[in-house]
Length: 271
Image 1 (cartoon, rainbow, N blue to C red):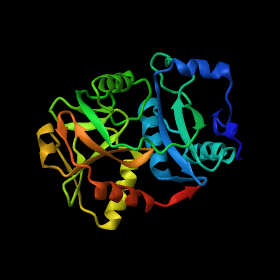
Image 2 (cartoon, rainbow, N blue to C red; image 1 turned 180 degrees about the horizontal axis):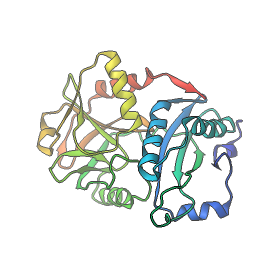
Image 3 (cartoon, rainbow, N blue to C red; image 1 turned 120 degrees about the vertical axis):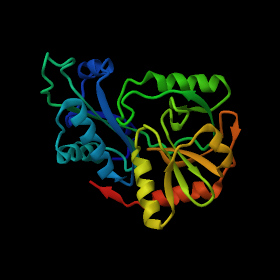
Image 4 (cartoon, rainbow, N blue to C red; image 1 turned 135 degrees about the vertical axis):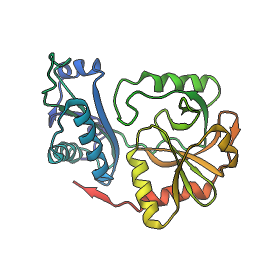
């Protein structure tokens, strides 16, 4: 389908969702999700998205829906949409609070589509905030802190915010993974954070390309020794970061190009 209106849709358990069903979800804070970009009807890193949903559902609900069922829900939404779009899969419980002593619920799946996005052009300048997201390894809803710190950063003249943990290590940004460059090696922060699907795609393709990588504690003082920095999420494999707090960072164009080349090397899955 190609008409503009069909880009925006929502399906609950494989059927069009009603307003009455959406209202409780709007006030629900116990849900997890994954977000992806669809291009030419294909999804990169589908296995990573399914793994994320499976692991988070097991953690939240004590059970996970079969991968085949989730793929079917995703495919149904893609089949009814233009070839290029943004797609979000949210898994939640429609039963509100669990009954005492029981987590035996069947999760529901909300699939939403919207216009495709490639993220901002950048470069970006990030403020530094001491903040650790609760349940950092799970992509869950209801995190007001991310938007709050984004707004605070903009008021301070920055574009977004990076988080530093209680040990002074940079971990991630509001809706981004952080990644750094020393001129030869791609450096990933060592801290509690969400392992992004884009991050995992880039990592496995860099490994295939023979590009050295390592995980390292990245303190603010370490920034002066680095040759480049970037953020990435489901929109894009790399946007240059030219400042973190008071520290300027060179805009390493070859580094950004390398991240994009790694992503382009990932094959897309046609559901």
